[in-house]
Length: 298
Ligand SMILES: [Zn+2]
View 1 (cartoon, rainbow, N blue to C red):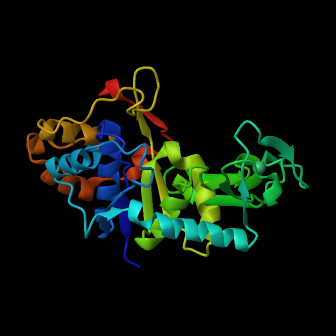
View 2: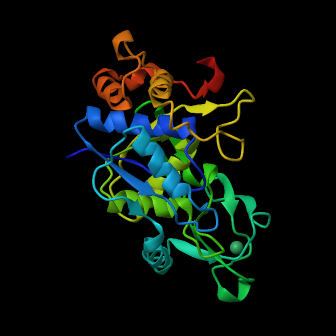
């Protein structure tokens, strides 16, 4: 099977150094396997989409000579398809409509003594639904176990650690879980390289793949870059956009985060040359068990 990897940013703002590291990590991992690397813009949540963000992301990928294969895929035109898939799960008795707010959902015991979040208002009957409804998948007591290429064996009892999870939000927007799982399937993604902040959500994604009878890809969760306060870099924590002018120096820094020390003769080279060197030399195992990388340690 041909390796197909991806980078799938949400256009909520410009890329920061943390997201660039994830992009480069997923790129060099795919290319090391002789694979394709595709680009998806996760713009399903139009409210969070920032004007100009997609352009800014593409400009940065261009500046850093990260060439994706094929056409860019956008999620927003696929919204109706995602909702249809969710509605089919209701008909199959695997999901239900729920009008409860997060506050109203309670931690409860199910028959196997697991403790999870469950709707207590019997929303599955229409007369108990008050106002707009989300669609939640019924979490059973199944154990979702998988091996992350970098973080090792992961175990999760679905009901215990997740409870009934949302696949369509109360504002009728497909959730990140549903959109990302369906998009990965539509794009034939075989390996997902992304930040460790998404590791705990992977059990949900695998459960969704199982009930939708989709292939489960391989997962590799990279450590995330945190600021001096230990917060993951993001727009909310004030992360600065990547500088598109100082690309050679920043590319060397990005490789450092990925555990790679570019040789002296490559310092000052174009990013593309650095990536080509990295494709030959990267061993993700060097990041084994690392969860966080401090931004100012380099
Ligand atoms: Zn409910």
